[in-house]
Length: 422
Image: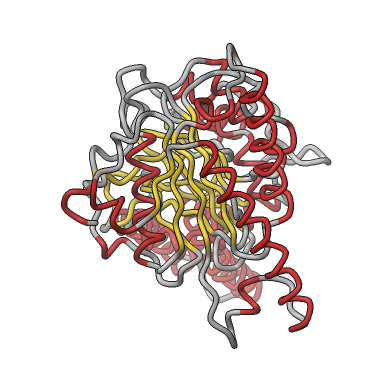
């Protein structure tokens, strides 16, 4: 607890800046210290001038100064200590939020920023607990703070953690129409949407492939189109396999990309992508580089995206002939090869599905797709894609355009109108 008092003392100056009303503590301190000093001074002056009385006067004067300093320290500790920090500390002990030696994070401050008034920030001395630990314990901390925790960040000195929260009944932003100004600089990052605090994006250098899932009217085709639109703006080579009849991609898409609706044609395309993968691999080896980011520092090389809108329609073997089943198995094998081996060379897979069937995403494909997104879904589909039921639990059944990624971040996808932007 002694260390906590030091934390509160050092925190007091920041608190005075964030919450000017706390200067009232200093006003009260000035009044009380003035009364105390005046009382001691009056008592001191009432004494005579004998040797003993002079000694007593000296003691009174020393006490006067010590009392002022002590009262100032206590006042600054009170300024730096949030009003209900004691209750937060007790609740943390109760739910087990503590480090390996039993220390709980110390609640230091609650504040808002002028630019984001709907967000309340809570600052803690983290006591060695990582940002990931706080993220894993969002539910417990949210109950303690009576708020939804939407983000965790270290302070500038890395000694504290700042939790961004919104009211429990608040939702992520409503519809956000896409504007090309949302496009992120550099061709490896694609914008997805926004949560309460941040813009959400996928970095293809880190997560080269993605799977996108959701039931009918979840908004997944809109999100897939948004990603492909950005790929087009970045001069990617784009192939789109659409086995839902091809109606979702209009003539503008057909003029600018290749829409594949035939499995034999798709087989040829996947074969050519594997050959291109081998060519690029040899190219990178000869140049002494390990990925497309390094290679394109001195050479031009377009990224390639293969997107499939409803992978289940492509890979479903139920009720098909023997020859078609063999073709599907061949297609599945080629997709697995690309998922496994094309990660660093600039060939990317964007796979979309709405059917909750574990057989559709086999182990090799799923294991090598690190970025996963799920819209509204039943618990089966959510578990297949995210390995948990968070999409089923966090997204209302009537919600469109709301998604959860593999990090359990819920966000609103930008609304993309291909009639307007493509």
